[in-house]
Image (cartoon, rainbow, N blue to C red; front, side, top):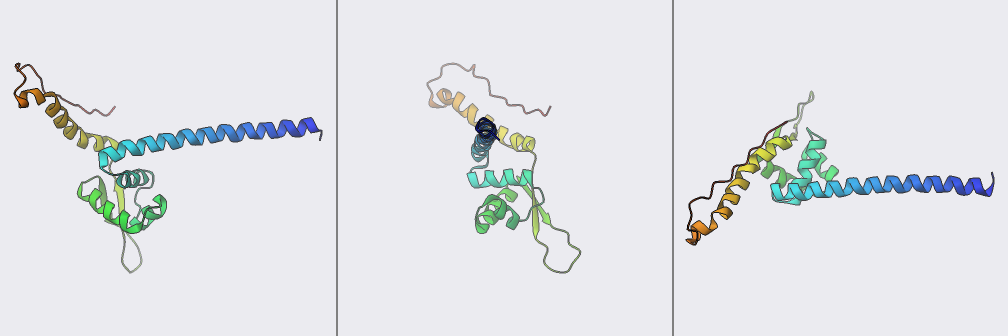
Length: 154
């Protein structure tokens, strides 16, 4: 193998590594942006990370979620309890053919259902802002229409 062939081969592998690294970085930035948005909807980054994990790995136990997300098991259990109370996550006993204590497994609701649940809250908040002048007594018109948010699945 000549020196030119050796240099050419290493340049190709560097380009492949670089393009793979750029793709990984883009995916990571997308994931981080998605988690930030979900953290706004679900109140905390912890709950958002758990939601994303459960969308990728439905029917996971709290231990599996903790291992997959890198979060402390006690933090995961607490967040799963809150997400279950909020009806963002569904929980049921894992079926097992053997004797013993069957753990709970969790499934996150569909993103479209998550958005539908949040849209009413956003609508109320926007209406409060739009009608601020009326509530403060500084608006002289009654022409402000309420904000309506409609979520459709296509």
